[in-house]
Image (cartoon, rainbow, N blue to C red; front, side, top):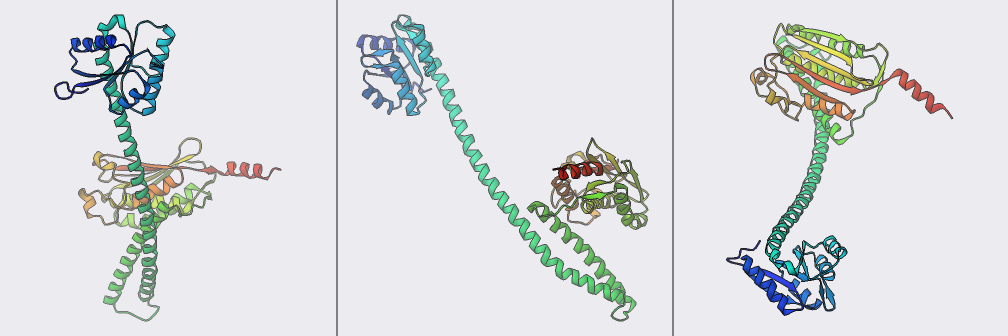
Length: 401
């Protein structure tokens, strides 16, 4: 609402009787409204005064050749938010309803003019609320446009990053693979004998080269998942066999760290359709992570369970250091490692869990973790699968004419 002390209310009054105009002005002042009132009685004058931006419009229902319904229509076409009150001597109920339906803020009979002041005040407050709503909606639309632009820029940057990482990883992997191959030839003595001191150095080169290649492969896989180019090749396989192969590859490391490595597979023996390579990759990431953060004499257990009709739940439980609640939300973020306690001593890019999450979600699954400091952690992955029986039924249906 305008401040009466510095900016008097501008009231546009559509009225062809000067006496009625004076009555309206008197009532506004009696109510305490400091107003600058302008009378108009033709459509041309009305349109001209609209451009001046009145604070409120008071309109007699019928003026010679011009009425309140026409004035309302012109106001709406202008796009201005100005409260509009209809004043008249007598009119039918249908006319009142039609005025309100067209957007009038209120309707008053001239013989009840003392109600004008409160009606004007109420209409002004409601109009201000509408204007605030419109400003908020415009601001929200603008924010949405800006957010969409930022999202598109972020998506483009993410794609470019993925392409860059994929290209760089490939360029790094090629010469590194050659370095590892030559180091293997020297360590195996296939190009001549080497001294014991040289053999120790070559084994260091070989070990670090393999470690670096593993990190580069993680970056490359992450870039492939982000860009949607990672291939998934489901095939019928046995969960027990995949779990056994994964554990077999890590038994030596677990023995060196004096950590018990157990399995508890309780799924039907029938084969199910999943990508065995990606499934093993998920298990290796979880198991390797568990072995890193479990102290000697600890225990790591891998479990497999049905989860609903067509989902497989894999869990890797450890008796390690555990994770604080405030850190759990950051576990699956790219290039992130929790800098806490024993984790400070563990090397890595922080990509293992992020990559696991992307691989599982790309196949329609989900990941998560339950943990508490000092009580170990249980990382899980839930993946959809197709049973051998379902695949056979699908093949039979597709073969039908």
